Image (cartoon, rainbow over all chains, first blue to last red; front, side, top):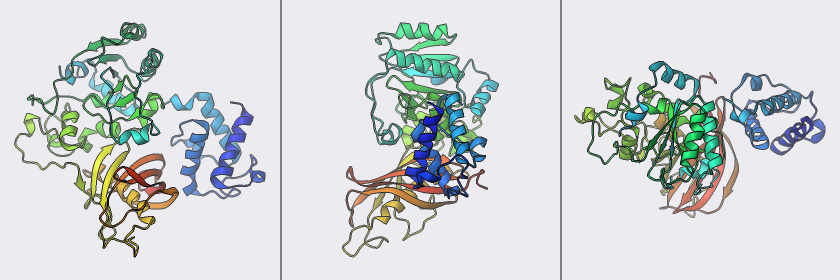
Length: 88
Length: 363
């Protein structure tokens, strides 16, 4: 999966699950301050990303440190790179 | 042959403790018995697909490879049909080439709920092993026919790591209920979990067949179990009646629609919001039952919201409903629970609720 595909699919998650306009989906956008997510939304985000990318996302410091959309792209890239669904 | 004859030796206490802490395995059993129906629990773990075709030789090799990566040192090929499986010799060779010890077990185990044997089984196999059936289902052991997942849809590592049942079974000192928990052998035996499950419906119940429990001095809880005492809701808000069946991160409960319960419309039908409350109370019953040893009730939790609710039918006074719930996802203290409410196998409603539970992480 290319970096551009990851960006496109991640943006789809925000459009489909949180009804955020496409124009707002830029890497520097803070998912809480700019996109309006709150702590209750994180489990929905995790589920949507798991279903969209077929990866397993567990409680992980990398998730806790996510602030921007760009952080999510990098996180998915790293999961894909390490074959996250098969790692312990 | 007892489980302990195969799975009780060759692994040191240190290696078993390491297996518990690091969620690795030391042994697996690949079972070639006929396909079995597992009841409602397959509705959720395999996206509703019931796997009734055998894994191919390539898929079985992949299971062995995944097992090796998880730390497995020993593979037992078992079941009445193991010798008639055409590629069994190739699988054994494949495992041996990975430096795995192999064993063949054609006959079943002696430890059955109906057997006359009542010696302490000295079984601790759940701390370091599991069963993969030739249909792909992962079971805690041959006696606990509760599928934890299916290797066709998930990696073995994910199934093992996500399993609440395995997590409970790896901690018998705190999780087993009743006399087995207080037995002098608890460090080396937690009773036969299969016998306990067959007798009570609870995989954490005491093994009533064991000679150590013959005195009958302890009460044993069996399913179905009234939910008063395990969920925080009191009448009239308590609208489910019993916890009926346990499965992996899931449970089924029952509710009898009564005239005086909340959510009843003037025409005697049930308001749609009641289905969400039934799902929420059912997941509370599952959590409360799992925590009976610790607090005697469900951990603190709140229903935060619902989505994807689909109403397909209506219930009215006098109907007995079945509610099946499944913990679909969890992040920190937040979780998504899927639920299905049905009447006589007709689905009336299905949907998802978002819940928050008090956990160490959410403190």
